[in-house]
Image (tube, rainbow, N blue to C red; front, side, top):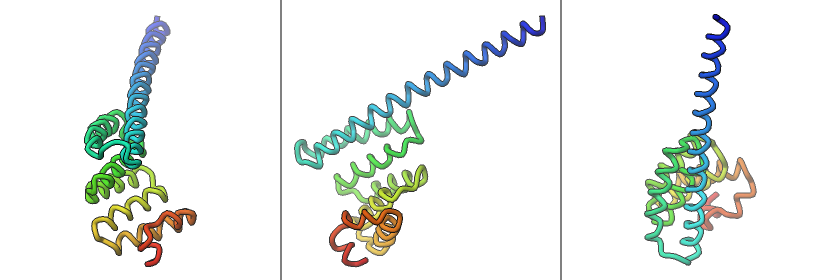
Length: 151
């Protein structure tokens, strides 16, 4: 009898774990879809195909995506890109710092430097550009022109 009770409990626990993983998978899939849509809209704004005011909807979608998948580094990176396109360097910097806490990447240091450069904090920006290029020397070709000369 004890074996049956233990088997029933283990089966229930296994079922609950499977249900939890299914919900997590669905949330991550939804977050991924929201991120992909936001990135497509960002590219269209950057290309001048649609007006920048459309980015406010993106920010709402990215907040929803972050709630569904808080460890997806692409979400704060995309949010930072939105803010840069909106000429709002301070929230862009906050977003890139959040991305760096999740996963330090050379491209994020580059984008953080861009936000700081836009905010007029050239010394901080140059330090982050230097770090980005040290991590990935190919990034030297995409540095802002004045920053590349200041290096």
